[in-house]
Image 1 (cartoon, one colour):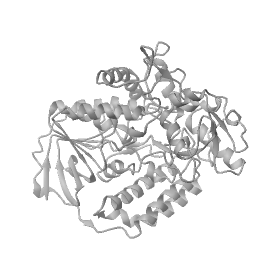
Image 2 (cartoon, rainbow, N blue to C red; image 1 turned 180 degrees about the horizontal axis):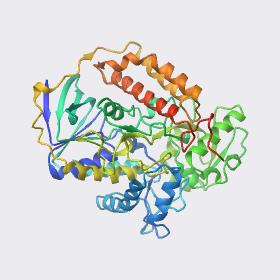
Image 3 (cartoon, helix red, strand yellow; image 1 turned 135 degrees about the vertical axis):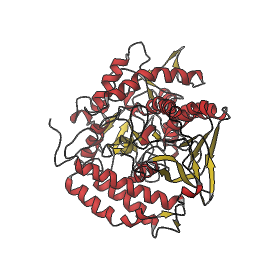
Image 4 (cartoon, rainbow, N blue to C red; image 1 turned 90 degrees about the horizontal axis):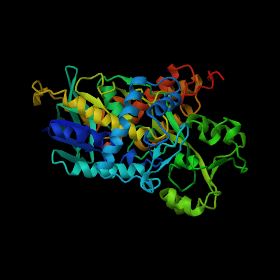
Length: 500
């Protein structure tokens, strides 16, 4: 068995992982692995922007209050204070590294999104903020010789001996390797692919949460899955995210009869919190016996729309929709997981030597419902903090020898893996989706239980291990949702709705 020894192992190459790697490089060798191309992460697809209290009309205190309110009373206030207080410093740092956020003259341009009480959303190239942040972080990391990046390396499980994490077993070029490290950082993103409709890229199969769970790490708040209200709904189109910023700029939701409806469900209409808007859309789809609703931005100046949302404009054109003159068919899709591997405000998990940052982690900063555009900021802030904590958590690997390692036995394949993967996604969408109940959740767990034998083995391909991880994460979400017998934030139980 090939064994690689490094100082620090980072699993994932989104904003959280790259920012952690940059910080860790001051203390030794850093090995960044990602199961696909380095750029292929949820960060790359983040359109709306990054929230930060830097404008003249905003304060850190107001950003704190908005985040707490969106979290529906379940935020970890200490984590929120860290986010809003350290956020400005991280953005200024990013700009010093070459980030080109959009400006109005010489000043940074800020826009509005749902549930924010101030215009505090920075964006880059209109609607390509995540791509710009990823570009800057990759460039910064590339110029640091301590950081080595490896694509198409899949994490199978963590190396845990006597309750401490010493790295990970990985699948590389069809062979299993052990990567031993003083500290290991999980930054694998979310798990949107467990749902039939999702705005997440294909790589988000919940791998980090699954391997952490198998290693004995505490997992928290898995019932809190945020569904984005507006993803493109077209037969031949991907479930492409239509940014919250569209509604922030005045886009109107209309039903299949072209009637405006959002204010019938909440006084804030299109700018209510995401869970409220998503449920409003579902209710309107059911009321009108339709498959989707429309997003209308045709009342805005066409040239402004093209400038402000170039990526959305070009993508919709590919599917014969000109958003400057036509209504856009939309419906909700799974978008963000507030839960994950439980950490403190320094990214430390319950397993010594194991850290987590970004969407895979659960600091409690989002509570029951993430405030729009706080996720990229979370990746920057807690990615930097994870690096600080891991640098202070030095372990010489004295107790790890090759003989102590247990090489995973990889079986050939999962029979009918394609069908099982699709069935998991459909069960989760139908039974553990935007609106749930004890009956639907119990039915989901019964269905998922048919494949529990899959969890007992490790497999020879990335695809089959992804199916295993999706099943494990799906069970965690469904179980957590069944045990929380009230409605709060993004978790809505029709059999016990929240009080008015």
